[in-house]
Image (cartoon, rainbow, N blue to C red):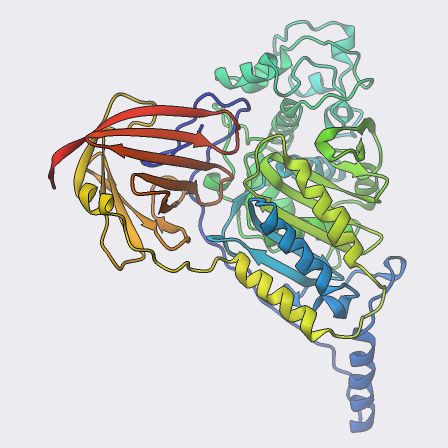
Length: 553
C-alpha cells in the first residue's frame, strides 16, 4: 500500500511490484510554426488561401493520409475532424457516473487535438507514470538499435549479449532464446507476472542476473506469458550495445527528435545495478506519450525523418503471439506484437498499462487516444468500453461534420467539470474545533507516523496537517486537492471532508503516480481509530490506533 504523509512513499503488502520514482520537472513543449508562401500576384495568393481553407475542412481517409510536419498540438472542434462532440460528452458523463478515476484523456485525429480533459489536480505539463507503455518504447529502441547495426536482428540470441556470465539452467533450449522471444513475451522463462518467480526479482540487487538464471517452463517462441522481466532484459541489452543508459539512448534516438524534453534519471529510474527500468519506470506528460503514438501512426516517420523503420512498425503492430479473449480486456480478442497489444476485432493496437495508463492507435481512423488514471489494479479493462462504446462510435465521417455549437458547449462543460469544481464550504463540525491544534500520538506503524496535528479554521477552504512535528501539508476542504512540495519525492496532494461529526476522510495522492490512498480518522473521546485503505489494491488496508492529547499546540 502507499501513503505519503511521512514525506516518502511507503510500499507494503503490494500484490504487484511498483517502482516509486521521484518528482519530475514540469516541462514546456516547444512551439514552432511555419507556412508556405505561394505569392506572385495577389489573385493567386487569395485563391490559394481559399483553396487551403476549403481543403482543411475535409478529413482525408486513412489511406490518403500523408505525413505532415508536426506543428505542436493544434486544437480543433471534434466536428471539424469528423467526430461527434455529443458522443464524447456522453463518454465523460459515463466516467463521472461510473466514478472511473481518470487523470486525463486525450484524443488526436489528423494531428489535431480534438479532446483534452484533465482531472484535478492534473494538467498538460505534469509528467505522469506511463507504467507498461515503457515497454512499447523499449521495443521502438530495439528497432532503432537494429537499424544502427548495434544489433544484427531480432533473431539474435539473448546469451550473445552476456558473454562470460555464468547462467544457471543453460541448456540447449535456453540458449535459443532470441530477442524476438522477449519482444513477443514468448521467452518460456519462469517469470510470469503476479507469481513468486516474478516478485523474487525485486528482492535481489541483480535483476538481470536473476532473470537470466530463471529456468524454462516452455520452449522459447511457443507460449505467450506476460513477463515484465523480459523487457528489462531488453533494456540491459540496449545498454550494452549502445554504451549508455537506455534512458540516455532514448533521449538521443527517440525523445529529442520527437520534441520531448530530456528524460532525466528522476523521470526514468533504474535497477540496483543501474540498468534503466524496462518494466514500468518512465514518466511522460500525456502529450508526450501521444507524440510517441503519433510516430507509430505515421509508420515511424517524424518531420521528414524515419526514426523507426516502417518494417519495424509493421512487425511491432502485427501478430507475433496469440493471447485470445479474457475478462481483463472486457472480453475482447487480443494478440501481441512486439510489445504492443493488438485488438483485431476493432483494428487498433496499443498498451493497457497498470492502473489505466493507456495508449491506443487507430490506423483506419488516423487517430490515437491517451489515458492516464488511478484505477484498481486488474480493472484496467474498464477503459476499453470507453473506447469501443464512445470514442470509436464518435467517429462519424472521413470529412468534416457541420459544426454543432450546442454539443460542443456540452463537451466544453464536461471538460470543465472534469478539471474539478470547488464545492461550497460546509460548516465545520464541533469536533473539528475540538481536535484542531491537538497532537495525535500513534502506536508504531508502517507509515512512520509518530504524531499528527490537524489545524482547521472556519470559513477557509483548506486545512493543515503536520506530520511528526516537522512536515506540514495542505488539505483542500472544497473538493479539490492542495499540493505540497515533497522533496525529494513528487508533490503530495491532499483533500479532506467530514463524513459526519466524528469521522474525517482524507484522500492522499502523489502527483504523477497512480496511487490513491484513503485515510479515515474516527474520533471517539481521546481515542483515534484510523483506517488506511489503498484503493488501487482492493483489500489492502491497515488499522492504526492513536490518542488525542489534551493540550493544544
